[in-house]
Length: 296
Ligand SMILES: Nc1ncnc2c1ncn2[C@@H]1O[C@H](COP(=O)(O)OP(=O)(O)OP(=O)(O)O)[C@@H](O)[C@H]1O
Ligand SMILES: [Mg+2]
Image (tube, rainbow, N blue to C red; front, side, top):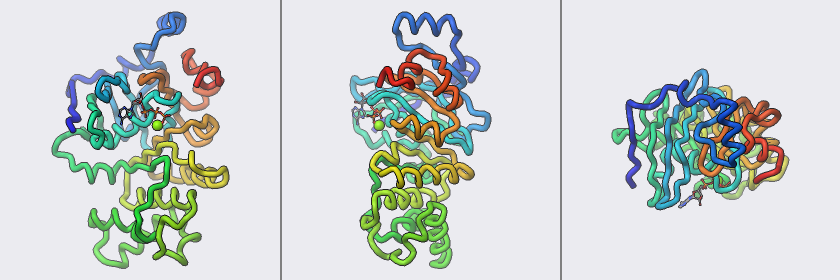
């Protein structure tokens, strides 16, 4: 498909799109309009990814409208908002997963460590190793537990012999908090694990190739509270090494795991800020309505 990049070199400075004055905010809230500008600081102190002026269309549907946002190194950023507001679409832009959707047209400036990820010279398989993804429904390959984790390191040539590959596989399972539960059946199918174990296997698979960013789209929505708690603990540990952008419908989960929260509404990024502020003292009326349960 034709993901193209517009306005390269003319992206606004963070200051331009950073905040919206109280008066214009109140005016747009009073008029019930979508905000033209995001409220709050879209920048991160130490960004690993920067997105400027992202727009996504699926045919006639304008799913993401001029969204600019940084993802900081070692931070967990939660993406929240009502169903259909564009959270998954935005997340998929970050590792070019929308390339696989025929009708999707993506424009804007997307950078990983300052490099344009939509540059045509970019190897998408390599990009998706650097920016891993974990989906709502655990999706292990129909292979053994070992092979699920070994697959990525093997195709990227990260191990020169079996002992090195073993180290990566066992180390990744350990970091995903799964090794103790699976080491006695490492050659059994990954699909034979419980849902929560499968999700940790998918996380082990993502971290086996040394990503910089992990994207998670409602990773706990198919899990029970105990499996959910384990994944949340794991997210806390992973943030020492990775940046994580997580879509969640659970505001409690966003509050527990993230340092920053971004609130989306009808394809726009309405407000972004420190998670505590978004949940206790949001600036925009739309955010307040959502987090207080009046909407969504
Ligand atoms: N593959 C697709 N083809 C066409 N339209 C799509 C596609 N995926 C999403 N859309 C549309 O884009 C908009 C945003 O959808 P998206 O899935 O990103 O929302 P979401 O915030 O993740 O919702 P949910 O919370 O239900 O997962 C919606 O109007 C949706 O119908
Ligand atoms: Mg979604």
